[in-house]
Image 1 (tube, rainbow, N blue to C red):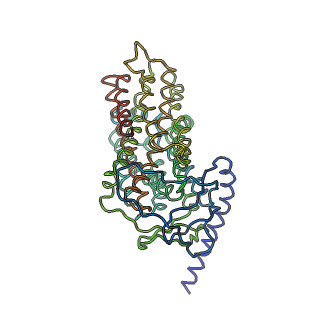
Image 2 (image 1 turned 30 degrees about the vertical axis):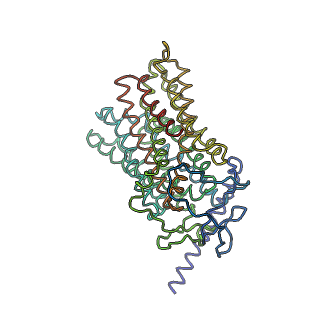
Image 3 (image 1 turned 180 degrees about the vertical axis):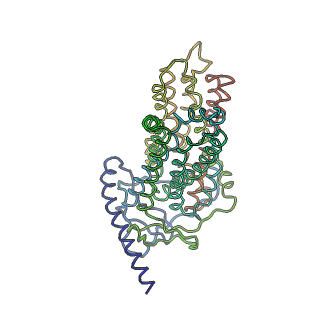
Length: 514
């Protein structure tokens, strides 16, 4: 009897969630059809025996029996050549209901998460100095976030299959939201040492939550959008970039309205609400580590078919094995070099432009040029790569070259004849830098995934999560090193000469891909 009651209760819960999904789908598809028109089929094409595949319309079959997959060639043996694209250009198609749900939720969450990360920049330094904290001390409060992400991302990438992508994503969002709210209570702490210790502790835990959710989201993207990985990844990166750009403006506005607590409580509450919405609506993977073959079962909670992934856990040296592949290593190097460049600009651009006596609002607008151009170029590059108009190798060369050249204008370069810093020329350099950033970060993720698969890694969630963790870790390493190295270079040799060091890094990267 108790078993019957439990099954009845489960059925009611399933029906309730299915009804919510139906209503949510109607809204998402109406909006999405106007702003996001993906190219190529979007149903799963991984031809593995026992895997359910979608129909030509992109919907999962309504019946339970599995559909035999088309025969495939054996996986290639490990090699060091650059891999082909992980996607294929197909005919026209539309996202399935499941994919629209993931796309809409991930876009909103990426924006809110990025805004929570960057919103304290305009006012936290002033609050910290009022407690007696020095700039070098509170500067490391910002840097510890990226350092923690660098150290933790590979861990989440390696063990994501065991933890489960959806669970890791939801748990990471919840932790980040709570930490954002707690950070807003630091103004109640009066002692310098207590304020500093709590700032470090909250930022470290928040970084762990963000690292978990970001790594899981990259993995889910690779699984759910197998034929439009670059476009989907780039579009979500656009939302993340917009959040980073809008974060300081949102934080400053809320700080003027309600003081120190308001920005963190408001945005933390928004992120917490988004995490709750994600938990209630996001379809779940039927994830089992006991099943050694990829099979498919009905996702009764979402009312659609959901992939069930095999336990394809890499060996204990999986991270080192991936980095031992030259293409994967070079992709990680590209990501780290680009985030280092972004960190260099964030730490040194304002003092470099201080000679023009600009208002803070104008300086903020100058920063937006770099981030805005990246937000625009990322989805464009993703679409070009997905449609095989642009290869990842060519895109990486163009991206690194653009970033290297951009410093010649932003400085300008000291070898230019008797040229002083010109504001419009610096803005032009930031424009080129933002475009070049999009031409590196998106292709590096796609190429890293393809290179791992062609290098002998299994085509499953373990490989997707492993490369996702390496991407996030590489970006965090550069983001931590950029401001640190930038501050030293600026103090010792100035922006114009210091920028040549960063430019040289990208010139070296270009030589690797030629």
